[in-house]
Amino acid sequence: MKKKLISVIAIFMFAGMVCAAAGNGMETMTKVFRSIVKNEFDHAWAQRQKLTQATSPEIQVLLDLSDALQLARPEGTGKKVSLPCDPWQAMTLVRNIYVRGEGLEAANEFLASDGIELSTDVIEKIVENRLIEATFAHDNEHEYRRLLTVIDETNPSYGKARAKLAEIDFKNRCTSAQGCRNYMRDYPESPLVEKAKALTLQYDYEDAEKEGTVQSWKKFIDSYRSRPEAQTLVAQAQRNLETVQNAQLVNSNVTLAELDRYAASTRREIENHVFMVYDNLINLPTHSYRFMSLKLNFGGATGRVVEQVKQVKGKSFTNSFVFNAQGLLTEHYDGYLNKKVEYSYDFDPRHGFYPVSKTEGGKRYSYSCSYDRATGRLSMLKCSDGTVVMYTFDERGRIEERKQTDADGKTVTSTYKSGKVRTETGPKQTMKFLKYDDNRATQIDIEKGKVTDKWTYVYTQGENGAWVKAVASLNGKEQFTITREITPAE
Image 1 (spheres, helix red, strand yellow):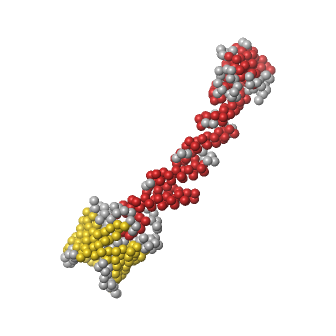
Image 2 (cartoon, helix red, strand yellow):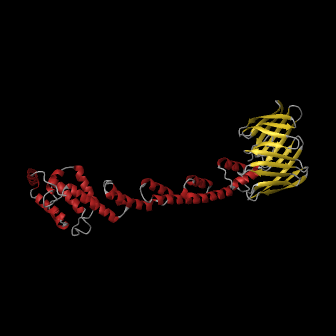
Image 3 (cartoon, one colour):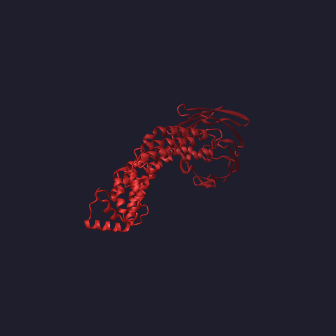
């Protein structure tokens, strides 16, 4: 771009000032720039060497500008001199000239001569263009990053350089899920963002698979549950989660505490194998969740429970119960009847725990279980003493009805809602469980024909959440008190 001279007077004043300061240096400097604009860099450099001792500010800025042009020269030129081709150094030199701001006006006056036809702005643009050309030619991350620090965002090359840097960064950074996330954060406009999203999904899945824990699969499922493009992997992750859960929780060593924690913290899935095993366990008639649940339950006890029963009118007696780690009753002593019963169990990986036998009064009785073929849930339990227990579940696997028939053909049917017993109907009476405190029944009405008796229970809770004392009243009058001493399983 040719600069117009401000005035003839200004030119003469500038020429006189330079001559006074540098003698014949301005004539040599003119030769330097005339050679540069003709791309005669060897000759320009030879002339430039004659001016190395110049100290005048007006000469100095011209020296710097000529050096910048030669440092930014095209590749393959100026090979006869030792000056390297370094567009980045050229840009740095030009920027320093603008920072100093000394002599720029005078330099523009000199450069605008017909023999040179340059200006500091034109030189800056030349150097910038050569820097851009060199950067794209070298095509490496470091130079693209440096280029973006010196060219303006409005420059078309800024977007191109950022796009090239995005391509390089994608290869270097998107090698892990976190790397891809960082990439998408830094380059939201990149056309590679969708590919980064896909890789993030794949990496997250692979990370969850590598860790292979319940927590890792849950984290993956929760993160991608609502993402349409991830549904295939989410479905596989859910299968993997169930496999891991089965390995951890569907085995003969699992404890009731572990199953309880799982049941309390996991959203229930209808086809979940762990829940099916858990349901089969707690619905056994000898389990601590169900044993005597129609009257005074144990709330998932393990270990030993000793009861002191004190009647208001009548005798006092002691009962004892021993439960295994799964909460299954292994030994029961009834102090009122002075009778002891012992139970044994086994484990089936498909259906979970089941009773094998009971020993009572010196006699041993065996059990057999039947399961629903479609769901694997317990459907019938038979004992060789003639007792048969039948189960009905709702579509979500929750127990709805339990029907027990003894050897004499007497049947007691229990109905449930939300896991709590609501009615128990036998040949002579119907029990209605009308009120609960959490899982503990506090009011049970017993209907015998036209007569209804109301039993109420008041509990005292121990430190571990289980109740340690219960006071039972019939129609408002206290009948008996049960005090429990609980020794948890080790």
